[in-house]
Image 1: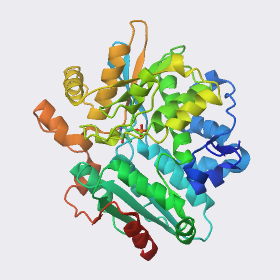
Image 2: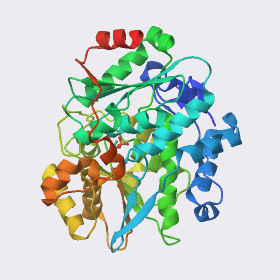
Image 3: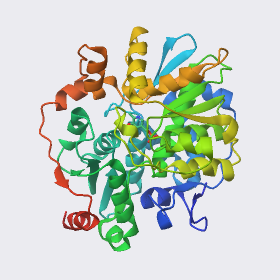
Length: 424
Ligand SMILES: *Cc1c(COP(=O)(O)O)cnc(C)c1O
């Protein structure tokens, strides 16, 4: 399988090259050139998560990675469970937060880290990534103490929760964290500017671990198969995905293009609603990003959206029938946390927002699956305020809660960042 830069299709590379390069020429995103459906999906659905994921990823990556190497990457990356929990009637929660950073980003970040480690030459590698909260922790924990790899994480100062910050800013060692005095879009812009600087890229071996890296996207395809495998045979669920950069939605659509039985998808956003308004009006009109309770989705320039369109334009996916998008506000999100709690299900605000968008649109004969992208304790403040009772911390959070944050602070100024990267 080859991967093309969707802005410059003449740039056509293997999977390892796409992963190492991160972002293509002219800030273009890599994406599979052709997507062949998987053979024998009924048999695949009978396998366990790791064995099935090996087959799916080998199919996507092709022979650019030896089978044994790829299999080892999958085993090391996916060393924690995916759970499908019944919530009510025909509604299920796909719990993706049982990994080390307690968010679904562990799947993509850990698979990418394993791939990069397996491709590594002796050259120094610097992973530069922007995070609105959860990517930072997943990437930092996936690369922590990996020899020859430095990680620099940019995040919007004061716009991630204290516990999110503790998870990735207290590690030290090869993990550097910078609190940028601006919003997430500004952090993402700094990453893009860094990639445009060829001299910088070459001198520090720059690589990105954002959802723009195609390795992360491919890894996320696997848990959509797990959801369907966990449902009664023949079920074609509706998936609802809490969406910010639209990487998770892209992975779901990719699973559909590979032949996974599903009825349709709902992309649920918060008030940063560039995509729902685009579906409504046909116009791409991003507005300034606003802060919400679901901070991992406070994004008005979703950087994976070109891949969603590519799935329609190049790969013929009928987006019109397959994908709808709704915006849910903070009050509705809190109401959803309460409504789920009344069903004895404790959901973080992002997951609850997806549940709300799902149940608003689910028809009686449909089965719905909403993606639970973070552990509720990661958003303890909001949950405690909404439910008016304390939330107990899981061990991974308890351990870091007393540690010192090691971040430096910086204005959103590319020259300053450049100097820092070259000096480190
Ligand atoms: C990153 C994140 C999202 C958004 O996922 P995208 O792939 O960027 O759309 C949703 N929920 C949580 C908890 C996240 O960390």
